[in-house]
Amino acid sequence: MAKISESVIEQIKSRLTISEVVSAYVNLTYRGGRHWGLCPFHHEKTASFSVLNEKGLFHCFGCGKSGSMFDFVMEMDHLTFGESVSVLARKAGVELREETPEDKRKRTESEALQELYDRLTNSFRYILQNSDRAAHARRYLENRGISLEIQEKFGLGYAPAPSQWLYDFLTDKHYSASLLEASGLFSKRNERVSIFRDRLMFPIRTWQGKTVGFGGRDLTGESTAKYINTPETAIYSKRSVVYGLYEALSELKSRKHAILCEGYFDVMAMHQSGFTTAVAPLGTAFTTEQCKQLHRYCDSISTLFDSDAAGQNATGKALVICQDMGIENNVMLLDHAKDAADVLEKNGSEALGKMLENKTPGFEYLVLSAINMYDVKTPKGKSAVFSHVRSYLEATDSEIERQTYIHRLAEILHVDDASIVEDLHHRSSAQETRKKAPETSPVSIPNLARVSSDMFLMLCLATKREEFPVIRNRINVADLEDSLAVDLFTLLEDATRNDLGKTDEVFLQMIDDERLKQLVAISFQSGAFGHNLQKGIDSSLDRITLRKFEKKKKAMEDILGFAENETPDENSSEIRRLVLDIQEVNQEIIRLRGRLGAGVEE
Ligand SMILES: [Zn+2]
Image (cartoon, rainbow, N blue to C red; front, side, top):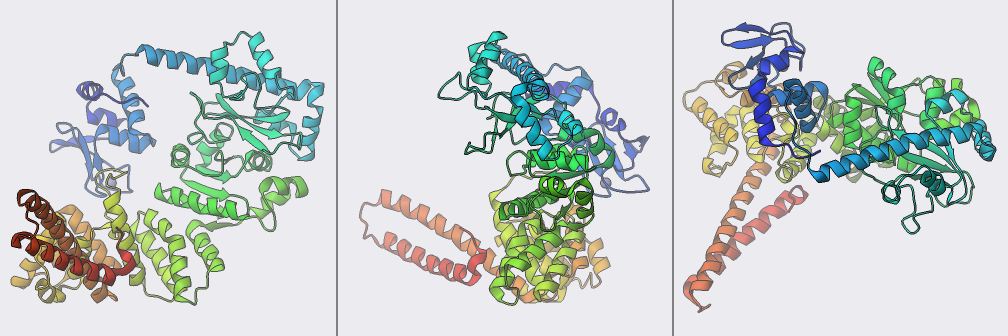
């Protein structure tokens, strides 16, 4: 996607009001200076979703979602920012930008490649269906139980064996040498040798049905690569195309559910057995881009990967990606069989359908597979099970859902919920500092496992307000960096001094900031800090002190560097003092790091 210029955004904003954009999706009524409607992002009966044209923003007072018209369209249609800009540009009649000569060259090349791939799809298919030289390919498909109807649906074809056949075929049709070179169809070492020789050909299509690449299955039995794919070209990126999406699209839209299998044959076997929403990532890894595409049409995904270790590993990763995107996920398992294609070939489509009647919810599956791998009776084993499911928990946005999983896991491991919350929190706050940019809308429902150490401490204290006067003496408000945590600190101090907010309800009413209120409310509801409160408070205090010392050390080192430049005599008393002071602070840092153990990452 080309970089979006600010002026395009300005032009769109000058021609469209946000209420115009929103009213294409939501019924709005004007009252009290704003437009109001039922929030499309959460279920509600009275309108708390508002649109303010002067500011160009929407905000929901119910779920806290807010943003611009571009955010709105992104969210509603599951688009990227660039895509939502082009949708609104079209609506506003704004030219996206002028085409440079380089853009034009690229566009022409892409169009030519597109035409070449579409044409080849037809040629390969014709050869498979009619040519004598493809007789063994037809037999192969028959042996694997793939019906003619399914072969046609997926546009299967055959690439002849002679290494220069494809080159001659395309040159005859007047394709230029440079286009053939850019096509990815030929060997890098010899531009006349096709990479697809004596192979069964699977066209890889975009959701609109345009062929952008091929997968080829070896039929000689002699190649080291059973499957090969077109490399990345101007029109093909394997990360962003979902195999079978075009063929499954209409069913996907109506059922809002997809089945994710491993390979070409699995997808075909599934369709033939009536599971017409089966698709596959290309290569083993399911990517975020692919998930986004599927999310445009469906809210739930079942995985059906091979039963071997690689397949199970891919399952875990796919579940986390779905969970992170808020897609309901579960796992289909095949008893004593390698993959769907295998079952179809040996037992037929009815048997396959029977096998797939049961699904295991994503989290349940991850926990069960971890229990099989580790000994949950030992501390190390428990910790390994936790590590196995950690990213799934982190990817869970709904606090209620997460609490449920944590509770379930705690039961299985015989630990208390709070230890899991604690471990999750320490890991995530380290990750949070590294990955700054929020991926979703600016205001989302707050998430306890993702708050800062400062906030974690203050939330512990808010849930147990009688502890505050004691802890208050161990902490200096100036050491808190999270401004919302400072707000909570001030509130707690207020409440203590004026003897207010004894009940949770009244304390909540004292909080003005909506986000803070939600965080505190969630802490009240979850009760997660309850059992392990002292431990949580102590380690948060250590973390805050550690951060303070690290800053201090850095500042002293800067002064030292400066002093050494100014005073050439390295024995000067000032420099010696500084060196000693730095050593002292360093001792503290080492001590604190030791006490915090593995929770701190460099
Ligand atoms: Zn809402």
